[in-house]
Image (cartoon, rainbow, N blue to C red; front, side, top):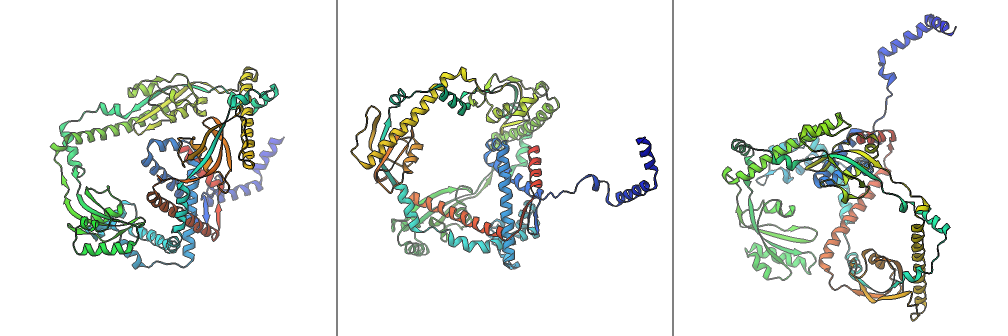
Length: 638
């Protein structure tokens, strides 16, 4: 018997020897070494450096946190889309590869930063200054708050300086915009186009269009999405609202006083500074001479208002009392380090040279509880409400997960009401009851929520509102049989054929006009809707915006060039007749904006070239399995 042979084999000397060898190997390597494969979990290797899954995930989390702080609920809606989050993760990974490859190439190029340079960079950082001087205690406290040691911060700074030592000269020389480039772009934007506009009598074209059953069926087959029923979802839901929670919170006078004492530093009138400002735009003639004259006048203690009167190109203003955060950082840094009744040195940027004169300081002062009681009370209630709201969101999440088939348990525990949505068509956002939004609509048509019939996860509608839904009825979208929509298919096919015919008629007429400007046209079919129409770039008063863009896409090398496109639901022909200048165009303002944008574009282009070159100097290996694993883990967490 087979079982007897197996039993005898187990008792054999050879089997026992093999078994002892395996046992000894377990003692040295552990059972895990046999049962769990040793995976390479590093997503990318660049030369000798590995980007770990933890580093990648950390960078992704930091990026999403910045998005949520900046855009709130809109960011949450965006990050709910798996394709969007996947693209964001991949972009972050590529940026990390760029940085590692570039830093590696910089290091290999023998660029080094000495210790004294690091010290100078730290001491010159205004973030570490107190009373206008470097403060070592502030420096140490700041980097501790950043989660860094002095050694790690110095190492990071060294790498950044090494990288900028190579890149800054290239960027500075390559990002400048030449005057002729600005002039050319300005000329293009100032250009208006003069066109003749013709439209088609679609009814006259349509009446001669015949559609066979075969053509209607072919149109139906090619445009199935136009003949689908709407998917419909119905669900129950509960809403947790921060404002309702805040209304129920009561606080005592002693709690208000205690809160004020704990946060007294927040109830301070900030220091305010008043200053005069002189601005010398970069675009003026003899700018260097004007700057020299201004600086001489400032040294001679002339008032800023008098200096401005001596030169019409100077822009003078009284900034009044301002606090930190109200000015550009370049101006603010200077103003809040100026002594009273003194003028600043020149403050230069891409657009102008600026001087400030500080003429008044209103020092910060602490407020009394009596003056701030209503605000302190509101802040205390808001803090308590926010904490309670966050606790209830967690409770809502726990109870709807533990009781997945119903929302009743969570509603009873949190004193909420289970609501009914009624039938909701897919994509019909307006049909949703307030305060439900697109995130809820997406969840109502989410395949997992539909098929499982269990509670959704908590949906963040906004910073103040959270929702959980349970889809209890769903009707999928279906293709309506052809015999039930045959008339509609014939009508739509007829319109499509008429549009094609209308476009062909207009194109034929336009080509004839190119050969003979006086060619006649059938006025029963074609209407001259506007002659010598002046089209302003981006202006939709004459034609709709998309057609406006099409007009400015007409090749300008030959008068008589044309386009035929849909304009306000009519097939329209535009024939180019000439050009004019937009006299309302604000050239100086646009020039300044354009110069900045072109410099930013040039910088991005040069950086891309540097990164591309750095990549070519490094061996880069992508670990697809590790990348997929990280993506899957992040998706599961979300």
